[in-house]
Length: 208
Image 1 (cartoon, helix red, strand yellow):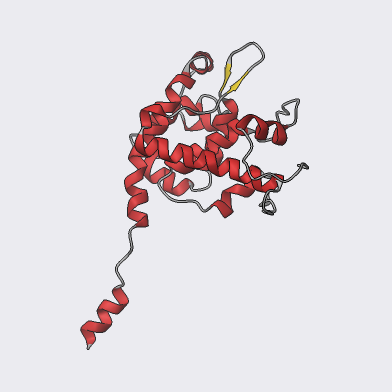
Image 2: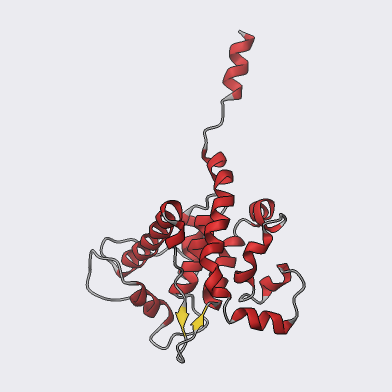
């Protein structure tokens, strides 16, 4: 990342090119995977601090944040998308649209997005287990898990041909699935954010 200082964020396409290269290297995390990660963070039953997840995008480190630097612009781009997804799911969940990749033949590629989502889920597996994975709501993850080979172990037993068939259209169901997951998890998150009573002060007053 070397360019003249700027005060603006990158476009999502620009950030994808910077991170994956002009050739779109499959091994690098791009904007679609970042978007999946963000969706999991916004929908999650618990808050995850950016200091924990931002380094996952930038090779295990948090970029230097000199004002106007390419690194600062990249992080700003990521936060812009995080705020956009958070606002949309809170205020207009029906309008949420993931950022999927498009293959050379024009077909939708949801794999990278699903990998990013599962990366976010893996940051708080116990909380996800208690609210989604080990509950009757686990089926909501089906349109995501069909694109994630390790995650398929979490699906009900599904023949390989059924998985391949679902992959053709399951991405259409992902927006509604993310909105539904957020609606289920949000009460857990809200309870976590509420101030807890100071029981120590209360008991000391009682002793007096």
